[in-house]
Amino acid sequence: MWVIVEAAGWPIWFLILASLIAVGLIVERLIYLRVNRISPPALLEEVVKELKMRGVSDGMLVRLAESSPLGTIFAAGLKNIKSPPEVMKESIEEAGRAVTHELERFLTTLGTIASISPLLGLFGTVVGMIEIFGSQTAMGNSPAVLAHGISVALYNTAFGLIVAIPSMIFYRHFRAKIDSLSVEMEQQSIKLVEIAHGQRKA
Image (cartoon, rainbow, N blue to C red):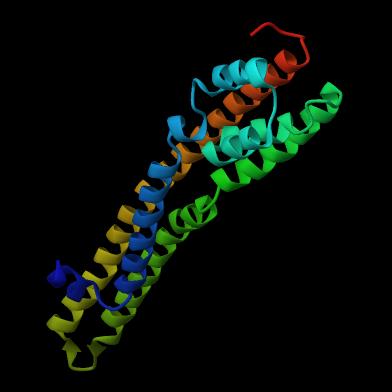
């Protein structure tokens, strides 16, 4: 590995840094964006059951808000359970926007890495080409410098693509997953409002 880094020259360090950041972000988002953690399937049923048995309490709201992002949205709505359905829905929408913003955390950075990695690879390619042309003298070409310039150009191009492709794949994957989770949480929240106001049976 170190031989490749040496052959690729100093521009490769920018790509190595970008790859380390990308891997860290991908692992963090894979762990965080789990369906059971974000939108527990049985949460609505549990909330409705407790609502019918004991009603809304401060302890219930605190427990819900700390349990999951969906629980945070439910808690925001249940705080206004005595208000008209429209007010309850507005509070849920506000909490939903905040939760969605939290789900999208780090995605901009990952998308930026996916976009700039090919450019960093191109930068390394240009540096390699400069070394190639710089090795040409009146006495002829220096084979060692020529070979090094070609290595810098090719390794940086390849590594830039190696970093960019997985980063873009996971960026798109996370975007689609967040959209799916947002729709699911919105549907669950609407059900809660309708059940709480007697417009729907549990």
